[in-house]
Image (tube, rainbow, N blue to C red; front, side):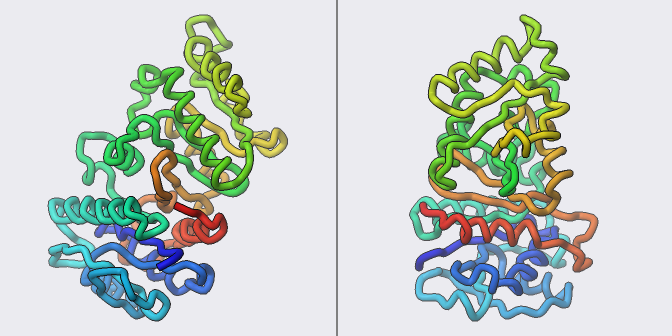
Length: 324
């Protein structure tokens, strides 16, 4: 089946079933794609009944020879639960990991173009490992350290060099090699998918780039990495002062701003684009996307969730005609 996309249902105690159902009602927006869900049929059925959302569901055990237009197909992953929004920790962690592994298996075997995973509870799913799905996929696929978290909007994208680590550990986790490898991954992705040579702005680490003092990370790590990247004909500019980088990105024509740590770029980006953003993992052999928001604990079961980011995730496959 061509143009087949899997949506991993993700965290059970969440808004995920709600946003999936709301997106399914907008399926005319992505009618050239065939979409199905990887998750628990019974859980999704009971959650939608609780929310009083009516759509046609069908449990399947394989994707071959299915009609993807008539009903929302759910490739069933077993899950034990008593209440639809109160799944216990042990059951849900196994369920989330099993669903992710199934998505990776199908994408790696080219049965699907790629997958979109709905939000998960990172702390409960990965415990003390202090990483998210980006790092999980990097480790599972043997590219840990080279994978890149790209938060994408057509006007601007951002990426952090370090991802889900404490701020106090950022400096020790920076290196010239890490910056070079991740920027090459970003450049290659833009060249392949968007057919452009991206203009990349690289932020410094410190306020005012620590005035470019000799012992600063800017002088010791970031500037040497920029010099190496320029030799590779990558359009890299910086180090940019972090406090002003987002003020004039349009005027300077940047396609992407790359920061040294998670909140340095994600906080201003989310303030600018809100739900009109998606999270793409680069550096792996297939496309993996997730909505750029959390599990919505405060609105679970209230039918208040905004499905925009999930819809944008699906549209990325449609608009970019992504090939595996």
